[in-house]
Structure formats: structure tokens, C-alpha cells
Amino acid sequence: MASQANATTPTPQEKRLLQSAMALAGERGWHGFTLVQAAEQAAIPLAQARVLCPFKPVLMGWLEAMADSRALSNPASGTVREKLFEQLMARLDVFQDYRPGVVAALRVTPLDPALAITGLVSGLGSLRWLADRAGLDRRGLLGLVRLQALGMAWMMTLRTWERDKGPDMAQTMKTLDEGLERLERRGFLKAAQPIAEPAEPGVPDHLIITGGAASSPKGQDGDDSWPDELPPDL
Image 1 (cartoon, helix red, strand yellow):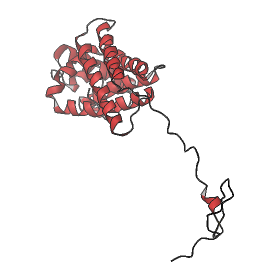
Image 2 (cartoon, one colour):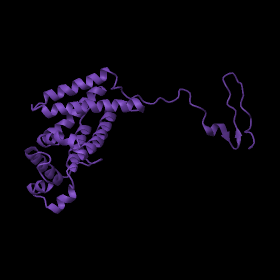
Image 3 (cartoon, rainbow, N blue to C red):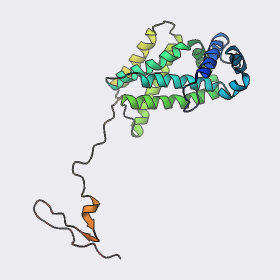
Image 4 (cartoon, helix red, strand yellow):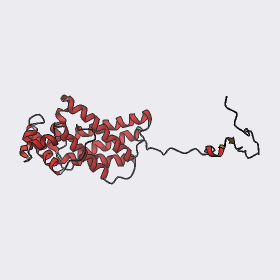
């Protein structure tokens, strides 16, 4: 999916323009309409529409922001897998509201570099937020691998959704569930663990050095192996 990075949810007027554009995209294809036509159909002055949406990927940015807002506001509980399932299906609920236009965009994305690149950037950003909320361990190189694996499961789900014309999205839900189950079985949905504090923290600096002299922490056996004073500067 394509979008501007860090796009915000659309205003009511922007949503009107989005609805008009998605309807035209569904009728004529993604490249078969202009933003001028979408603005005119939505009864938005062209000069204002030009400011709101200078190019088409902005439309997808609004849609992605709406989908993220729905997913992150949706209650989620259970395992990492269960939380991801609920959140990703919440995103698809938003896409479903604009289905004809979204499908039109998906079909041209492989041949549209701008749409593909912006879609990759925004898609990874969305997955990071959803993964963190679900409690997925994203730390280190393995965390990056886990996120990429999740991205592959999401793309497979989108392909199924594109073909799934059922109002209940049963086939889509099945694909997503099976994909997440496969990731969980192979260890790609490891839950993040809190970073443990040291069992025996070191002595605080203010107890070691006071007034230029070092105090002498003693072991349980009374041994004092620390110098009474700091060595002079060399």
C-alpha cells in the first residue's frame, strides 16, 4: 500500500475527496482518473484540493492512517499471534470500506515505482507499530527478520483479500490465521521480554567516592581490599 510517511488521519473534507477518488478508481482504474475529477465530483474547490492532495499517493496515505488508527484503537488481548490477527483484520475492515479503489491501487503497484516505494515505507512503519503493540520481540537482527516475516504474511493476506469478494472476508481471515500460525510454529512470533535488571547492582558512585576519598566496602568476611584513598593523578 502506498502513502506518505507519517500521514495523519484525514479531515472530513479530505475524507470526501478520498471517497470520491476511490469510487473513480474502482470504476476506471487507478490511472484512469485525475485528482481534478475526484475534487469536482466531491464538490471541493480545485485550488483547495491541490493543497490537500497534490498527488495520488497522498490518498493512500490517508487510507493507511485511517487503517492504523482503527487497528491501534481496537482492543487486543491474548498471545502475540492473537493480537496481530485482531489488529490486521481491523486494518482490513477499513480497506473493505474502500475496496474498489484499494484493489485498483494494488493491481498497479508492481508497475508503479512511486506507489511501490511509498507503500513499502508506510507498510513497514505500520507493521512496526502493530508488532510493538502486540508485544513482538523486534530487538536485534532476529527482530528485523521477524518483522520481515510478518510483512510477508501480510502481503499474502492482501493478495487473498484482493480476490475475496465475500462480505465476511472468510478466505482472507483464513489466510491471515494460517500465516500467523505458521510464523508462530517457526518461532517468528516470539514475545518481547523485559530487560532484566542486574541481580546484584554495583555500588553507587556517590558511595564509592566522597570528598576525594574512597570509602571501603567490605565483603561479608570483613575483608577490605580497596585502597583507603584514590591514587594521585599521574
